[in-house]
Figure (cartoon, rainbow, N blue to C red):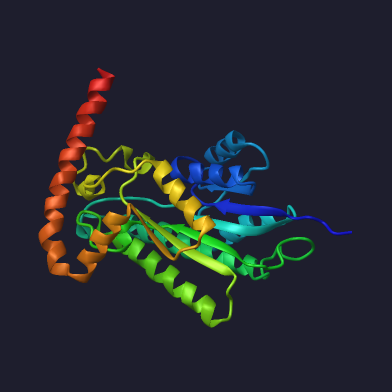
Length: 289
């Protein structure tokens, strides 16, 4: 007798904000979704809100064993891992020399190492090597790994140097791994990086008075739905790098190609971002009053 296995997806940092919305998208598309977050209560609440077959796990993406344990728990439910979304991330601003060693380590480990741990765990399952891949779990068959990177992974970001370094690491790792898969003859695992501009999520809600975060406010501030729709598009048609919006991606690539141009132009963009911060702050305080 043939057993039909469920289509499974896992999203990191999905207890709230953008990750929560991506998990909802996947559930709406018929996936059995596992919501992971470093906070167990937040992950459990998000899974309950999504409903259906959503499950949850408390995961610190810096710990590869925790990432693998969540993956194996999902596979043990009899599904096949088809989609993995690396969404967990942190944002701390300021010049590198003003940040503590712990802050710099947190940025690099959550943003970069977390994405590496998730990608490796997903590849192992999608190639049929995960601990849960035997006895009705995933036996390979490919899949899609999506990483929420940032425009900070493409160009310079004054005020967010270590954050930019972590996102540059994510981009270098993801694009290199995509090529490694092809060189190894693995053609059924896709890797996609979504590189959004600043998003109005809990990550930047408290940055309105932070001048070091100004560049995140210098464009058209995105809503989570803008990025969720981009995730939906790459699910339908895999693409290695997608900038949101595309014009800001072109601007970031221009700055990366011509660093002198970036040095001249980015302070002006930061000034625009500070004006937006002041406007949003005034609007918020007016609404409270």
